Amino acid sequence: MKDIHNIVILTGAGISAESGIPVFRSETGLWEEHRVEDVATYEGFLRDRTLVHNFYNGMRRKLSGVKPNEAHKALTRLQNEWKNGKVSIITQNIDNLHEAAGSIDVIHMHGELMKVSCEKCHRVFDWDRDSSVDTVCPSCGRKAIRPHIVWFGETPYDMDMIYALLSEVDLFISIGTSGVVYPAAGFARLAKGRGAFNIEFNLEQSATAGYFDTGIYGKAGTTLPEFVDALIRHGDLSFLNESK
Ligand code: BJW
Image (cartoon, rainbow, N blue to C red; front, side):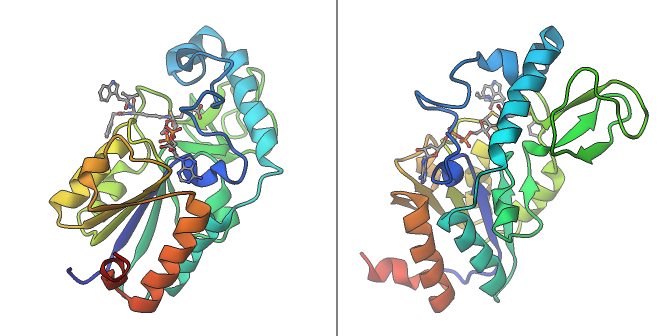
């Protein structure tokens, strides 16, 4: 097994499930009362801006009582204690639980619930209250505020930075994502192409399980802290062979 320097971590809704935030693709998922087309596309926003503002207002309010879990904390520990290279966290999640756990430089490729942006001047603002069609942009003064969320058909954020990280990754770890939404679902294949060792953490095999060298299945709040502890102690993945 090759030496590990740079670690890239991709997280999805499953890492926040044990904090009480429902995942997307389940019977009780986040879109349960709405069609995805209505609340997760720009066309849906054009059809009914009030509905979409209120949908994300509800999510933003719920987030205020939510705390990071052991999986978020384990990633912060890895960032703090890994001395052989860089640990980069890319999240598809719009919650702020990685930051609440103390992680730094988190890339939110699908946007952030605690931010809004202006459709006219394109500035982004920290936002901890409700927004509506009448909300005035703090910068240009126009009523053109939208949730700072990447909807289907829109370009995710920081893709240049993400591709640069994936071009120098030695260990790629995917946690709690179903692997059905692109471009994130393609990162494991890119990392493999670069020669990385790929590991997925999930309750079950994801749609992209074929691109992973190994999978660790169970709740991330239990499996991830154990893995991070072993990785920091060994400095490599030799413990994976020992545990077989
Ligand atoms: C646990 C656990 C525990 C549970 N422990 N695990 C046809 C083919 C290919 C692609 C396309 C296509 N047609 C259109 C596209 C593109 C489209 C796409 O991928 N569509 C697919 C549905 C087919 N993608 C886009 O439009 C994206 N943009 C784009 O591609 O632009 C072009 C471009 C590409 C590259 C460079 C430049 C330009 C934008 C995608 C935006 C996604 N936005 C959302 C948020 C919506 C708003 C909201 O309501 O919040 O992001 S959708 C939603 O899905 C959200 C998530 O981030 C994302 C991924 O979901 P995630 O995180 O995987 O959650 P789940 O619920 O699916 O899975 C949870 C997992 O956790 C499960 O596996 C569980 O088992 C596990 N789990 N508990 C460990 N305790």
